[in-house]
Image 1 (cartoon, rainbow, N blue to C red):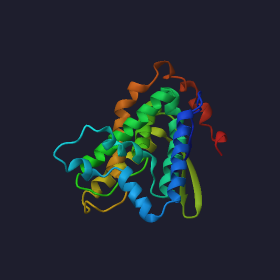
Image 2 (image 1 turned 180 degrees about the vertical axis):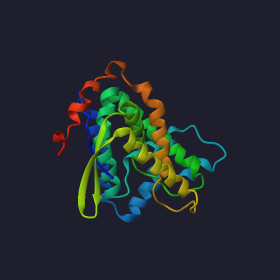
Image 3 (image 1 turned 135 degrees about the vertical axis):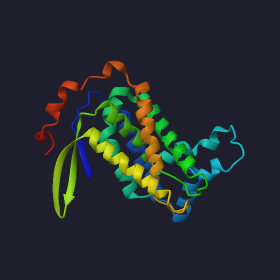
Length: 241
């Protein structure tokens, strides 16, 4: 189930979305220049290591101690990790930014990423594996998109055998399917050894919930209904294929 694009136009240029995608891409290029040992060191310093924050008697007030909650959002563990995150960002974030404005969207995006990392730490308090990636923050974008544009449609590719099939799925159904996959995968991960690396499912779940809860604070009210009369026109198949 691969999203191709959504059906919504945008009224304003999504400068912040483009900037976030570009920044993630440039940092990943820098990662490619590092040796494996240097890259592991980078991830341990600038990634979120739950045990660093959870297995202590008290947390310091030094803001730099919490810097990995920011820097981890701009690091990725491989090509697929980067491309899949940035592709979802490209499809869904522009319309969310449209309703929030660039600066508000940036704050919203970062808060969702912070929240996602804390949820991951709470669920995996003894893990010494660094967590990196924009997935938690992007999950917040998906949560906001689902609430703001439930009747939008997402053109989705379903590869069956060697044949591609395209379907226009309501955004609320597509995103809820994605969310429950994350949730059930997260529940399944609780049955595995704690220090086994992999996908930070609970960061996705946490980021999504933060996005659903927080998005209203950042929406510019006068932009709330700018798309309503354009759904059917822009969701026509001829616009996509």
